[in-house]
Length: 234
Image (cartoon, rainbow, N blue to C red; front, side, top):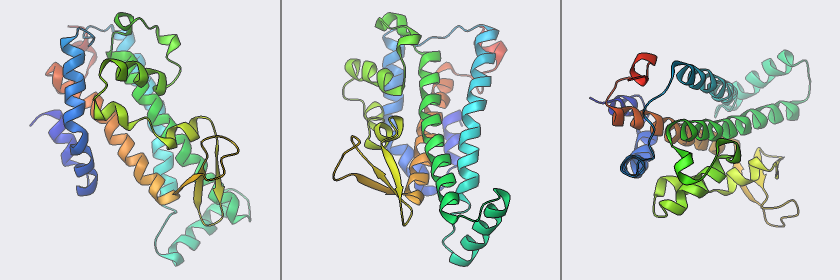
C-alpha cells in the first residue's frame, strides 16, 4: 500500500470520494511536471528543515479552525452551551463577536491552506524553467495561473480558481446575521454569493485533502514512504 492509499484510508467516505475525483488529475499534473523536467528531486538538509517548519505553521491554522468548528453543533442546546463557554473564555457577553471569531478562524485556515499549497509548489517545482522567481509568485493564484497556461486541461489546477479564494484573499466578504458569509466579487457587488459557516468548514476539509494530496503523491512519485532529511539528499 502506497502513501496515497494510506492517506485515503484515514478519510471519511464523503471526503474520500471527493479526493478520488481529483486524484487522477493530481497524478497527471505530477507526471507532466516530471516528464517536462520541472519536478525537483535534490534538496539540502536546510531546505527540508525549512519546509517542515513552514508547514507546521500552516497546520496550526487548520487546527484552530477545527477547534472552532466544534462550536457549530447541530444540537442547539449543545451549541448554546459551547458558545457560553467561549463567551467566558474571551471575556465577552457578545454572541455575535464569538461568531466573528469562528468566521475569522475559518477564513484564516482557508487562506493558510492555499499558502501551504503554494509552499509545496515552490518547493517541488523548478520555477526557473518556467521563467519565474519565487518572489514573483505572490499567491497561489499567480502560481496556478502559470501552471494552467502550461497544462490548461488539468482539473486539479482549475479547482483553485474560485470565488471563495478571490473574496477571502481581497477581504471582500462579510458575515451576515444567520451565520452566512457574503462573498463579493468587488466591494459594491449587488448580488454577492454566500456560503454558510458549516459549508465553509467542508470546503476547508476539501482544500486540505487536495493540498496534502499533492504532497503525498509526490512522495509516492519519489518512491519513498516519507520525505525525511536523509532521503531528500540522495
